[in-house]
Image 1: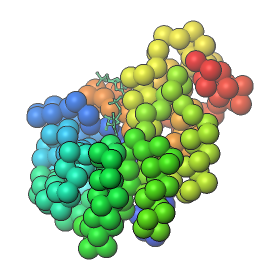
Image 2: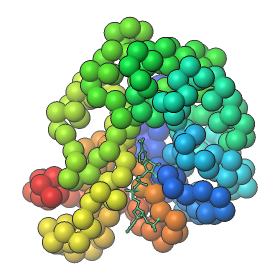
Image 3: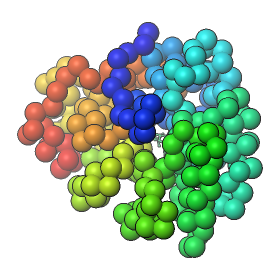
Length: 257
Ligand SMILES: NC(=O)c1ccc[n+]([C@@H]2O[C@H](COP(=O)([O-])OP(=O)(O)OC[C@H]3O[C@@H](n4cnc5c(N)ncnc54)[C@H](OP(=O)(O)O)[C@@H]3O)[C@@H](O)[C@H]2O)c1
């Protein structure tokens, strides 16, 4: 069943669904089955990385799902240790995924000092060659993002960073917004005490679960969510977070956990 998930436009015609499916630490048969189940549940955005070692299984799940390639947004990431081997790394990702392009390619982590800029230039070349539809970064602070912009005139369209009630920085969010960088937040469930009484109280008030409250809180801040689960019922739960609204007091309370 496909849900109506709002998307954010990264570039003309490049629309990133604001709820995606995370795939870190899922490999082999589990990666294939989880990706199939996620697509069946309605996810249309899958987050992977060279380092996750599951691109092949995700590509197979995508093909077997019967969905059109254009219906699913695929993100993958270049490991910082592959700086200088961007083209070969992308070749390998495209081959493993069995696709001609990815929708978003991220520098997974800032490469060693001095290597970030050449990697970014290479990303822009791959984008201009049509092998990636958009280029971004992950785990970059504001100064590092600005360095790329200053040198190339091109700002990463996405910055994927750790984000959870206990680990969020309003100033960083303001900085990214000012630069029109879309923030994706990872490990928000993993890094949250899901039995926290304040969170449990809010969840009970809305008749939802604590993970749903956390994901709703992230989306409220315009942060794209990419929860990972191997369980279909949790995949569906994590996708069903758009039919309730948190009050401003509740948003404050979640931010204070
Ligand atoms: N760019 C980076 O450096 C970076 C770093 C880390 C992660 N990521 C990306 O972000 C994605 C998400 O982060 P993450 O995988 O670290 O953590 P996460 O999605 O916050 O949490 C995953 C954990 O939460 C459990 N879970 C999921 N839904 C649940 C629910 N509704 N109720 C209770 N438990 C639930 C999962 O267990 P089950 O599987 O058993 O359900 C799993 O143990 C990753 O998969 C990856 O794609 C990127």
